[in-house]
Length: 351
Ligand code: FA5
Image (cartoon, rainbow, N blue to C red; front, side):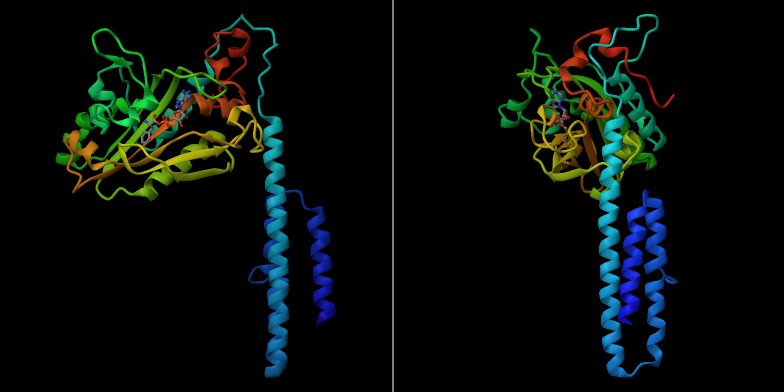
């Protein structure tokens, strides 16, 4: 028995050394631990053993199972890490010194990412809404539960017009109008509200590699009966896996926004440095990308929807930061530079 276990371990080690892909690794896992795998097969010999021997035998086989599972898990991590490194190396890093190709036009990287997100969400039944860049204080703040003098306004200082209107600091400024636009269809016909609304936002910001005074967000809302956090997480996951077409590390942590309860910050592992820390992620390895949460009852009520009957989620995706991560752009300011050297290097990989 001990000999058999030893030889299986050696065989596994030599097979693992040769393995290059997760698909082949899965085949190995099945051949050892699957229903008809060689480790499972060992248990067949147990019938002939005495009670005492069976105990000892079972213990050894279980230990072997644990060792095999651990070795496969470690190999999985190693292969996944290699895949990420290869993806990062193959990412279309843009080169600021490349001569501009002025013979043909090209879409701005934010437009490309926005179109991709729109296509992902419309395929899941969301409508795409357009909204003004100049809004009222009510739309931008009061309708989303940020009354005058609320401290949350400090984070979103923006540019005010002489008539009291302002340049919207967040796409959440459209939430109230969207709820009002679709509430009748929801209440009378039972059609869920599912909308995204991309748009340019403005903030009085000290700019750096990840902060601009003009940037794009894409808001999304879904309201129906029985909508909960798992719906929110499903849509977030689908969106990110479609945009990046591979597994990326994300983390969800509590976040405060007066218009959601509970609220979350959804961060992604920085794809510029692979999470090691660089100026593009403020040396933290993570980038705040898509805050989200369950729509606050006050916001639903303000939109004419009964929060006792309906619930919903909302998210505010940082489109400009998404474009940075997708195209490997290290400094957000390059995106607003207007430099054709930068902007002519991107193509739509979906077309
Ligand atoms: C908001 O603007 C909320 N309205 C988002 C929201 C919507 C939360 C719905 C919950 C429900 P925040 O200020 O964190 O939250 O901005 C959202 C995202 O926009 C950030 O994660 C970031 O990706 C992007 N963003 C914010 N400020 C800037 C900036 N100055 N430059 C570039 N991107 C920015």
